[in-house]
Length: 590
Image 1 (cartoon, one colour):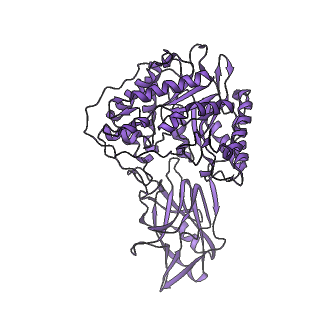
Image 2: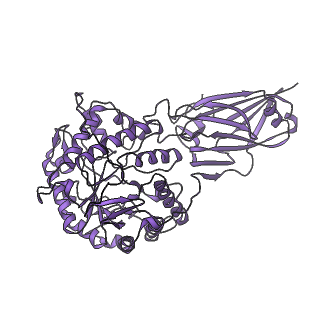
């Protein structure tokens, strides 16, 4: 998600309060309703249906909630989405501001302090839903934000008295999300907000939200995720909130609001989240220019198909809740941005997605710039994208995702070729022969994502998820009488950023092999952007046999666990005590 600019409030803080009881219903409905309900969107296999007919759509995210300029542009924004053939609007009913925040902050919040609903924001949500109803639009209403924009989960943690730290971008790192999952007080504060929204009656129409077909679904979070160690805790939270929402409103669908996945371990978490009890459809967000595996249009097709197939595996329809193609540059993925968006929407429809919501229709005043689909002002800047959206909106409205068969896709992996020749030099002192290999002089890196970095505090080669990093070196004839081998390197796991919020479980085992023969295994230090030294030694005959043949040898570092966070191999750094190369030491027979 592009995080729109908003006025900054003081960092959340406050006294620890007694835990409030969670407002959770006793029963939780599954992904399909037991009987048809006229006028409400429901789930049928891989599709959404309305009164028995397929309900597939292109719509749009709408910047109509946060800030007076966006609220003032409500009519123009909804008019633009409807004019482009949109059938569904995604809006945020969230925002948490401090008790002592300035009065203008009420235009950005639904809750002032831990227990103070902002009446003006709820009244504006009434207007949004009425605006959707009069235009024949349905609304997906998001109830909480994972990020710190407008408060979010960090604000709930602050109100609950839970210490936390934001990363360099001002966001709560994924590795810190278990702090929220484990806080009874923070969860109770969110549950109270959920009850206020879902249990509300529209003051303009007099219709309880639960009885208004204008609402398509309640989305529990915007872009929630979890590290593998907290997968179970995330599912427990989603099921608890879904039970609460279904208890308050038995008519509408519920989604998790998971951000999606790029790695194998993240796909496992995503499938667990969108397949949780009470979650009716799968959702994911798409910003293809930001991903390692979408470098061209063919890879974009595979990226879309992979997510539709993953949703089918857990028996859920798939909605792409945000799809962003830059509006600040004319080209993306080696082509025009309009052609890239056209390809995405075409693939989503052909492969069986139930809906796509481009990010983000907005008035020109105070609009987020990077992906804004302007509804007034310089609309000519985005006319190409809006024409594509309108064309596919018509095609989606006639589609039935149940008849689509998404193609099989390649495994989540990416190979990066390194140097074509070994770049290493032996040095000898008597019967001891040492080889130093620069980490960046790899022959091949095959991970789910990876690359190399040169700079402070340390240069390194990294691979994310499962995979292997391979080096090649030559063994001169004069070194063939090896009787022992010792390997030294500076390694760590590979986590987002510098591992902010990481715990001792956010690591992996590395297996080191010589010509496919295992030298040894080591537990990787947790990623902190620096790494730690490991040392492996072997006198095994099968290992030494590899060194008693002249020619080129391969040295491989492999990470093979399904939930592995990956591997970093470090080179030169700021501290002279650090190893600045991979070192192999042979002790030869005299």
